[in-house]
Length: 113
Image (cartoon, rainbow, N blue to C red; front, top):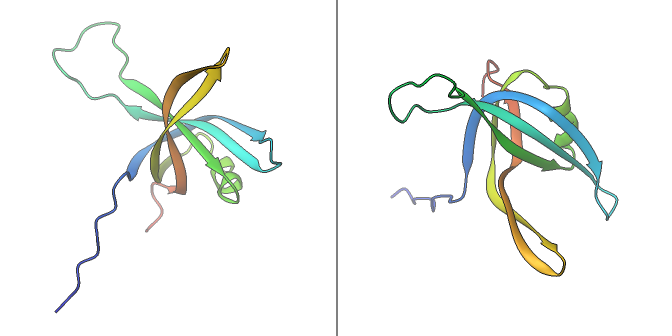
């Protein structure tokens, strides 16, 4: 009898165009990459003038994958990762930031899996 593997939760898989890549060094000395994945925005009703048809999704990556992502700037890619809400503190008070996709896989959309 085949044993079923537990489903993975908190996984995201998106396709879009990479832009606004920025590399940063973290306080511990490791490399981090921040970018945007521009994806089509779903229409939720009648089309209105002036409504954007694309939206940027924030991406973050660390380690070896940073160089792979950097080589794909402005390309149509498929990214996979997990959702993570980043928070920070201001004047000693915790503040919630944005939800980001922490990327663990990135490839050109036209490359085979």
